Image (cartoon, rainbow, N blue to C red; front, side, top):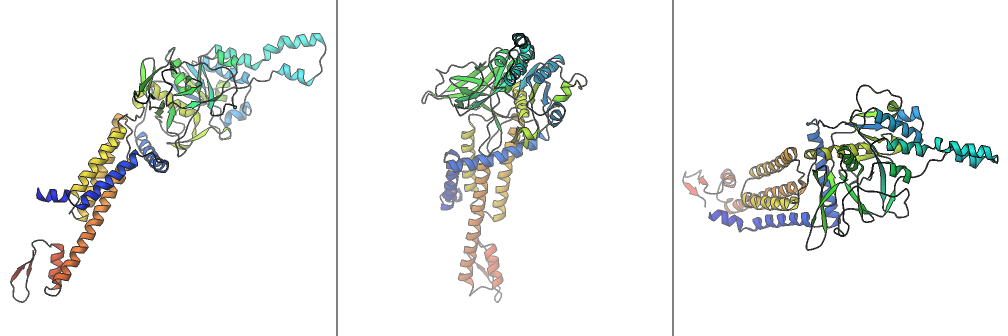
Length: 490
């Protein structure tokens, strides 16, 4: 007991405590550079853990999620993109006929397509009234936008739009939203707000049953790990394309939102969304971690040209939720993600939709994450600072390796079983720092003891006995070579 109190009262114990407090400061501070470094390393560890477990866990979905890809093959056979709206109409019609339940476009149509009749009027000097009347008669029949509108009316479709940070960079028609939200109650919300929008022309937006934004936002290191389920624009909340597709798929009228309001600051912290009474937790910004199924092309892909040319087999589209987008390099919709650097943006929406339909696969970051990390680091610091003083280097290293193993093992277990995303970096770094400090302190202390013993007894005791004193200084017995007497060194 006396030895334990002596250890706790030593300056090396308090040095360990100060190191621990410093690491707690690193966790709680919001100094940009420190915060970004911490987030960057945590991101790398998150990616490693995600790829490790996803390769071991083959996920099967109850939903038929399909990606119709405007790929290089489609552009070779159907012409370079953008295509005429009449071709898009054919695509929608064919998908609906083959049983697609919901069709979501990772594309927007912000400008009307020029009507061929208008082209003729611009490039010719027709004055004959009968010809002009005849052209007006056929104008609607060759209007690709009207054809597209008709196809949308006959399908369960979601059109995409893009929110921007530039109010001047705005085009398209009036937005509608399915998210229940009272801006008066949530004027201090942390949900990301945008002032500009690029949407679709009114004829198309009115015909579509749903609208969802296609924005994606990367972390500070440029990798996409989270997806915003809602974003704010001019006092309204709008759903992502995946969330809106989930609403249509579940035959829901509205998307319910849940919040936590801090009574001291008035800030509204987003908590979750509900679709068809199924709740999906989010962070305070309305974001969820993307439950990537695996690397690119983990979902079934169908080439758009194969759909148009009726080259599909069986019931591939029966009851399917179809996301239309592109994996073509030339169209620049490839993103850096946790599971790949050239990941099709449209497949991100497919992963989010699958997570919305199966909340148990979505990684979560509990509200108590910060408190958990602080308590964990304090326990590590206090225990290691108490136990490692006076131990040999091998013992200290063993204790350090054992502690790191426990931290990594428990973290991986909570991720695999409960899908909890808990931080790792600072706890592991604290453990390694304390381990190396006490190994260094033990080495310096041992060297100093050896030097003192050599200076004290070097003139009276043979070198081999001094070596025994160094390795076993307490209570060592040195026998005199000349007289054979025992000399106890205390």
